[in-house]
Image (tube, rainbow, N blue to C red):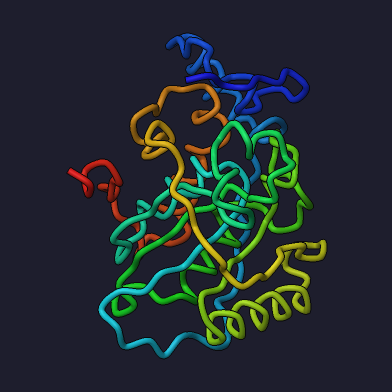
Length: 245
């Protein structure tokens, strides 16, 4: 496979993808990540949404985009009640739903994650709270941390009117509470389609825990999930490749 690389941003995924993740480098980045002055962004402690779904189906789906899908997928794979979390692309056409096309930032897609979950164990509102709290920073417009471009935008792709109402109401509540200190820039759009990403992107965090980008940008998210949502934390992640097998 061919991967585009960019060296504009330190520790960006493009800069590191394809590089050899040595143990020494990973250890260095992990040490850096424990230093608050240079660490990946900390989680936000936020209230739950005031309204939630009334779903009665055995499984429901949600689609969230919040920067690099490796970390977002990794977070939700560790949430109790999540049956599957697939990295992919939403917001553009099927013809350009490839990593090569999306990485150029012109396809209209966002890197997204499709979450299949049991609403009796975890609700849509609870998934939203985790999304806004630990999975990404919803105040960053068209970027997340070191990754810049519209493909890394914050966006919720709603499947029905109930999801749209819950999401829009919650964003308004978060803005009113000023819990982030800055406005939430997350877009809310109707889901037109979700296209699974290439297999080598699936389960990337779990399969590559010492990869420098993962160590620095994404492993802290898993620790934040465990700390802030201990009742929803699953120590064993639900993996896409295992589900397919």
